[in-house]
Image 1 (cartoon, helix red, strand yellow):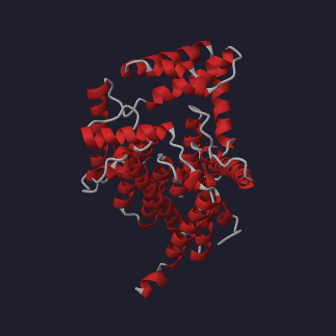
Image 2 (tube, rainbow, N blue to C red; image 1 turned 180 degrees about the vertical axis):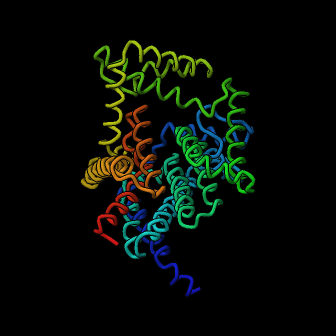
Image 3 (cartoon, rainbow, N blue to C red; image 1 turned 90 degrees about the horizontal axis):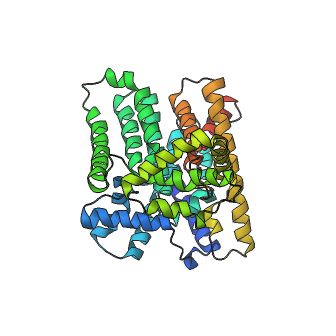
Length: 406
């Protein structure tokens, strides 16, 4: 046992440091006095309830996330216990994400340096603050880092099984956050030659199984609600956020999500009509309101880049000096990780074209998240925290390339 602990001392230290920093945040920001439940949380609870008690899907929240969130329903039926369990789930995902960052970096840097860089993940207030809410970000970050860990193993060991595990984990992430579906398909296309030359490999069954689950999700939505789709969240998001802001800009009216008649309208429609209305609205705005649509899109990305953590902003002890410091730090971290992440992504993809697939795919992932975040707004840093750890990887790779670290 002692040899095992010594051998994995950095992993154990990461568990300790991550836990201590979470406890510090919990007590310093008086999380024990916070009772806010976000509307998104209510929809996650509804999705879990539909899956576990009625064997049905949900119009917004996909299967895998509902299965993870609703696991406590096997033992309890109370909402409070469900939320508490998912905070514990977030804790494990948060800690394991730090360990995965370390595992990836230790392939390129000495263990001590990889450890210290991994600790930076535990200092990201936007990520820490989300641990205490039943949302999707913390779980999604873990899935993304796990997929990137498999990609790194494939790059090092050249074993086809790791490539399939990368693509499979990324594909399952679609059923956590549906917006990643185009990226997952693109990466499968990117590795089409490797898949073609290994068509008879038994590991392909893993990827086929993942996409079978996705098809089950889509077939279930078709049967229940009317469209063969993963979720209706894309239509509602566009119509309520980007589409609304573009329409308001045309009329010189300020955007306010809390009092948005378009949101009330689209939720009043039948599910197939939600898709239809959102699609027609997008076509109409592209044709007749192009400038304001582009302006709204750029404004969304801008605010998603400079805004603070909503989970900190919504704390009820918002008159304390620590609260103001937390707001400032989370805002700075959002700006830093976004700008550095985007710049390094562009650098590696277009200037210093690298053969390291982990680096190039990291860059594609960051740019994809930033570009798709323009579909929504007024969510603080929630859209961008999911690539903070990937930006951290690119920073480490860049500093090593410039021989600042080794």
